[in-house]
Length: 351
Image (cartoon, rainbow, N blue to C red; front, side, top):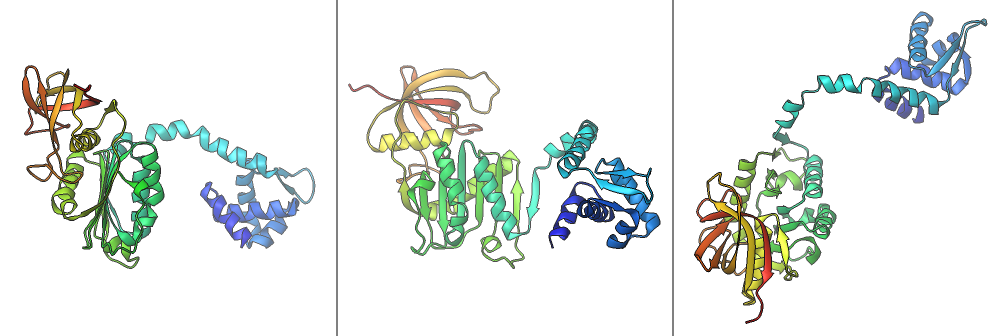
């Protein structure tokens, strides 16, 4: 079995199965002959000459034909494997020239059929998140992503988690998300990260290893945005809130709008006025961003209860300045007066 595993691994380095068998034979014998290699590998003697010649070219063995019979000796494995790796590196530049990087970057859609692969992809995406995670997942498979969610919290990634098919038997830690909701009904598995990547599948695709269901992965901003909108409008609003994180310390700067909305909502719920300094520009325009500062007098949101939104996916500030009052949304805002980025929230000084 060990020899079989070694042969399998060697073929991954580009050796044929016959070459790998012959190499293992030479290794085991230290110094041997063509006849022995032929007999041990069930390769004809004439073909064995060709095989060992290729092994010599790969700098894995040495052939001494100054003696009779010809002797075959293995180069120490540490040197032989280094020679193989060196040969691979030598063609790296040529391979890079052949690689169609543009086509690779455009690979923004894929179908995932295996339950194990779906769960692995969920973990990988959560691990790669830098700004935010929005996730709906059945309670019975929550443990598969808990460590990754906890790690994301520790590195400051904002997370909304909906645990579906929940029956009060699964313990949900407060340390895995900023907001946790539960719902006793089934719902699609949904994951979006950083507004850039997303996965959606039926619950059965992650619950049943024999399921014919599959997941769809997207890395297209508009589709991922639609996934989030569907999640909020159809499922998040149905959940029961189990946990909401405590207010963070201020001042704090947010490069993503949704975590800023969450933080501002918590402060306004406690009747603690906030000032926001942010870069804004008129919605649906290509104008330059300008820095403005004003008091947040209202937050429209459906992230943390009690919700204050006027429609399902609304996330916006009502900001008051000496020059008037206006509304602010995040990137791609369309009904607010301005879209904002790089928001710094500060507590207003006591009056």
